[in-house]
Image (cartoon, rainbow, N blue to C red; front, side, top):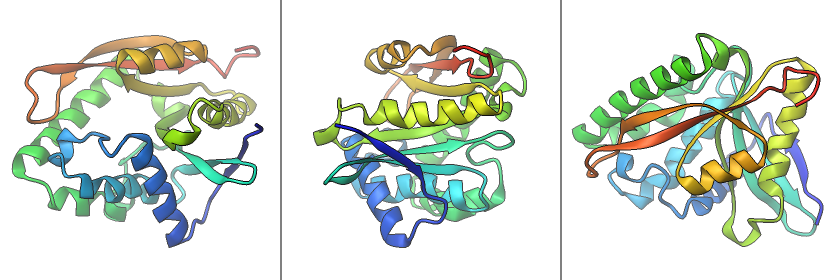
Length: 220
């Protein structure tokens, strides 16, 4: 079954709602669940805030994957060279700040710690400025009933071609052994890894892996 990928630069509110729902379903309404106080009602608004951040001032991109006779079943949010997620007030004001206001002080404090640790890990792994110089994947997901049909792969390959055309790397991060294996199978290389504070109420840390594909090279 062939997958069609396209960028959606100016999605309607209805499209944003659909894309947020697709992402929430892809993660079984548990995307960073602890960081949201395990409030499943916040999942769609939280993921919508990722989408609206990307288009707030054109600092990111929304891509969708479609199947024939089905429609959109996969969504990815990317940030190209020059920007990253939440690096401007416009992005934060496009939904993120509203979500943070709904969280407990414990959860808000965790996000501050996590985002700082995350940025440090990525910079250490790639080297200064590499993330801002490349195409970075913020979030990607396919509805469960259409997973393992090549939708995620198509969404990633679409950006790899864009990155290769302008000679920049393709970058992403993930947690969990299953996800690590998936990205290795897509020929991404581990640039680094390290412990980040786990979201409440979980004690200890979680291991995050930082990946790169050198799409800036002639062959990748």
